[in-house]
Image 1 (cartoon, rainbow, N blue to C red):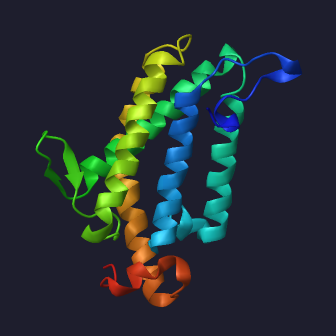
Image 2 (image 1 turned 90 degrees about the horizontal axis):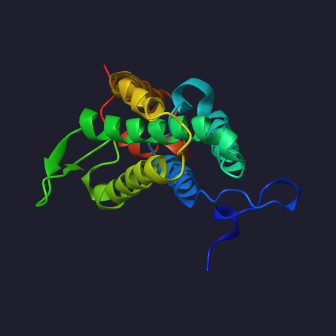
Image 3 (image 1 turned 180 degrees about the vertical axis):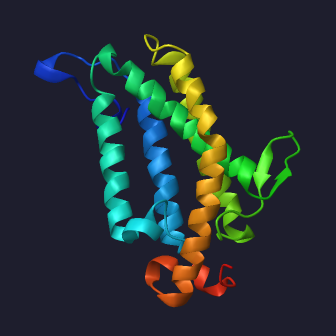
Length: 193
């Protein structure tokens, strides 16, 4: 049994190429952003456009990628880039925040964006699931797209690391100046310099 949003048909009753991995990737990336908001550390862009604006932006992005995943292979380039961006975002988390190694040698976040060690057992699997489904989607579902599209997204990792830390500093300052439900965890963290 498959959820209908994973296997939606194309236009005029024609079956769309099924892209369940791309759909799982974008939904799990959205879940990652919602997890951060629900945990009280904000979400990407919240320090700039506020939590509601950021939630609206991420809802539009998620909906746009889900809609594109129901189109024919003309959407492969866009979807390969979206999957590559997801992998780049996950890589930026794993490279830009404190980690330890698991028994298998994989990096495991010990803290990230103020979530604290107590939430890492939930946060790490979300990130790894997104990364794994994104990689599988690139290999299996976006076959007409050139390989360099998702690979080029990996070039964004240093910029994404810098953005994550910049945004985290802004969110910490905002939590001290304007405490609210969406930045409650950051209120307990020392203010950013």
